Image (cartoon, rainbow over all chains, first blue to last red; front, side, top):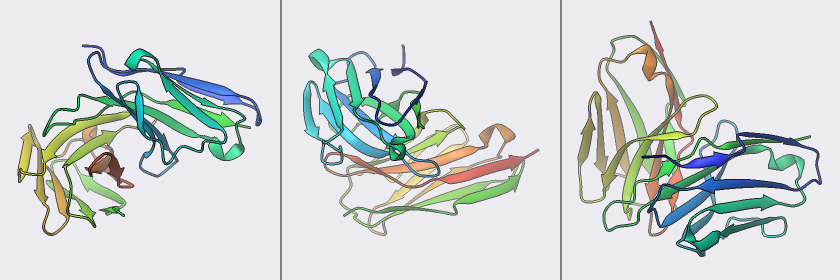
Length: 115
Length: 110
């Protein structure tokens, strides 16, 4: 079974440029998460989808960040314009939300460097 | 607001030693707790998931326990190996989302 797929793995951009990250979750997983992880810290949730609906985006900086989950499968996270402080690893995770078992599975992440 | 703490932040042990990693959380109303390992530059690998009704879970040399009333979980690693060197993160799930600790960076010396 394929795991969570993310691309690109690395991205280096100048500040004020746009950037987009793509995630393909594990087949059949109805819940998708985007996290941001700063160096030496645990991941912090940006947005959570149940199928195609964003059910928790309270931590998403909406002035510059946007996300979508097409047909409840793949998802794209966009930053426009990027700032120096956005440099981090962006992680995508998915889970099958059934009662009592919500094990999350993570992709390899996209390491973003904003210069 | 749920807060998750992992102590120690870093740990170095000789190969073969049994060790315990700690995770504490402030709100006992959790749905489940998940332990992960993260290798440098990589994503998170799920190790164990403990549901709120369970006390422990085991997988190979790993054993995770959960005490909701005291807000604590431990990850026990038996007979540690250099390949166990990584950062170990715990994540606590409330009603809708997981809150992560900052991790324990483990180094097992050959």
